[in-house]
Amino acid sequence: MRTTARTWTSTRRRSRWLAPLLAAPLLLTACGDGGTSGQGSGTGTGSPTDGAATGTGGAAGTTEVRVADTAGMPSAFLQYGVNEGYFEAEGLDVTVDVSIGGAAAVPAVVNGETQFAGSNTVSAILAASKGLPITIVAAGTRTMEAPEEDFARIVASTSSGVEDVEDLEGATIAVNTLENINDVVIMTLMEDAGADRTQVKFAEMGFSDMLPALANGQVDAALLIEPFVTMAVDQGATEVASPYAESRPNMMVGTYMTSEEYAAENPETVEAFQRGLSATGQAIAEDPDAFREALPEVTTIEPDLAGQIHLPAWDASVDLETLQFLNERMVRYGLIDEEINVEDIVTAPTD
Image (tube, rainbow, N blue to C red; front, side, top):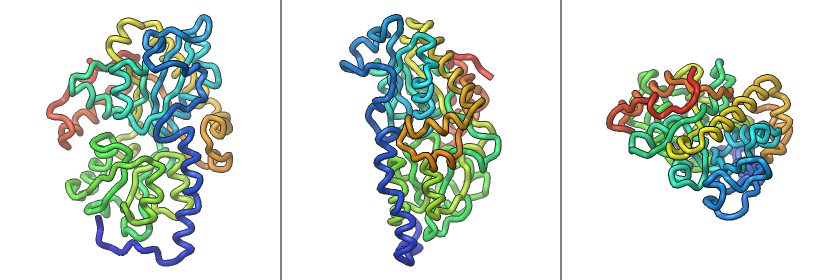
């Protein structure tokens, strides 16, 4: 971590950072670091492997499935589709389980606790490189065309001295999971900027913990997603970069995966899930204001905040070029020993 002083210069500055933090635990109740959202259409009764693992036990004429998805916009997107009936229209009774990140959701898919998991692309590649029997069935979140409109930012405290990507050399950055997509995009940005990517440190913590960590000098910067980006910026944080959008235009950040066994034994359910995702993404693209208005229902984000945040783009088709870009970078940065064949881990329409 940097040696620059991290004591806040005034009580007012400290209060600007800490004021929204009382709301953070409430935000994470519905879009947070663990647990079941409780707002899905599924019943959620019994253990995760009772009934749901075999695709049974839903409402009459429907198939019950559990889907683990990452806290924040990813889980909000999925819950919105459930609430609006796009999955029910495909014969699915979906329960959304919120996870801290893609890496945490992979084991649940492999062992059958959940039928699908929202993950980031790097988690999917990592799982496949370790021989885990997973397959990507759809894309999740994507970056916006303009970096300034994207849903993810690296932000820094004003006392850290971090103002641009070059300043990340020697800094400590909070990320929600280690050795994952955030490491890859941060090191990509640093390399592109001529900074020494080996001189950055990463600290793993949940998104709700990142704002207080910035305030108390525990970290210099944090890679946040919405709504935490807007919360941090409104309280005076310095915007450093849009790591996903600036690493690769139109990057496919998120994916949905299942186990190879489940995909092989339940192709109709997989296709129904893909159609539900596509319908949800299309609805939000056509009427983003309706999604913003629903955010206080599918999360506990206040209406004013919901109107300010930047939304991701969603497109269910899989971008093989993004997968290959990250595949190559993961080898380059030592996350995997050798590239995998990305086409072998996709069971979905591609771009």
